[in-house]
Amino acid sequence: MKIYNFAAGPAVLPLEVLKNVQKDLVEYEESGMSVMEMSHRSQVYQTIIDDAEKNLRDLLDIPANYKVLFLQGGGTLQFSMIPLNLLKVKAGYINSGHWSIKAISEALKVGYVDILGSSEDKDFTYIPRITNIPEKDLDYVYYCDNNTIFGTKFNYVPETKRPLVCDMSSCFLSEKVDVSKYGLIFAGAQKNVGPAGVTIVIIRDDLLDSPSNLPTYLRYKIHADKNSLYNTPPAFNIYVCGEVFKWLKRIGGLDEIHKRDVEKAGLLYNYLDSSTFYTTKVEKESRSIMNVTFNTPSADLDCEFVKDAEKMGLVNLKGHRVSGGLRASIYNAMPLDGVKELVKFMDNFAKKHQKG
Ligand SMILES: *Cc1c(COP(=O)(O)O)cnc(C)c1O
Image: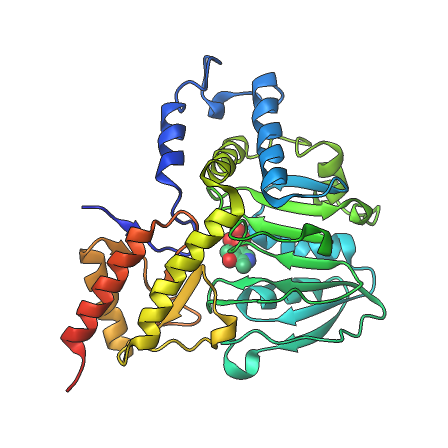
């Protein structure tokens, strides 16, 4: 039976990429060894990491005055590294749910935080619309673009003259982004671009300076100066991300993947909108095309849904423990057929349980 994995992360990877990695697992090209065994200082590995960076730069059209870093510590370490490097006095944060709350609590350990807007009043089921940011004295403005847990996504880029910092962990490379609008973008790989263990940071040159008493490893500058090879990097994970970047280029880049993502999400949301059985709490304008959250009429039926779906090979549809309900994560690598199968299952489940 074919399994479709709707997990929020670690998540589905393109089958073609996994097969290529498998083919090269024991011996990478003519190197005589696996990428896992290679020195990160070897010429072969240098080419792998250089190509990964170059392909990412091509995909996102990253301007020359930005550095690309491959770091460790997950998205979570960025919640701390950002304020430790950039927060001198005060930063502005938009609170759109779980992951921004975590980021805010880390920033508060370093300095003052202005909450520029929040959607807490409606359980984070929408994205706050922030205009006229009072930017005086703000070292940076921070937001989380796609809220993995609640299934919401910013459909605009907040306007500010201060450096804009963005957590794109769960929507990275799902659409084109104007990198020049940002001071710093970061993304943990395991949602949309690769295996867990590597975090990508794109940072503008002028933000690389950090307080001199900051532990070396936490400074962006040290990683930038050493081109992500200050110490042993998560070498194999970076290689797999590089293969995903190549795959994205082969299929036609971010315009093509975005078209596919929109089609997949459209199929699911159209079904949800037409259903009298399922509900989705997220406001229409704030819907994520990566993480789709919904509910059946009861928590018991939600549980039954997850179990029945699993029997059909549709796995990991349980919502996050924070929000409950159901969630289908349909990242770049989820095939259209997976979403079609899901909708078919949902319809059968509804017919079986709908009253009247
Ligand atoms: C998963 C996630 C994180 C945390 O990532 P880790 O790699 O587990 O630290 C941060 N932000 C968002 C938006 C996420 O989806």
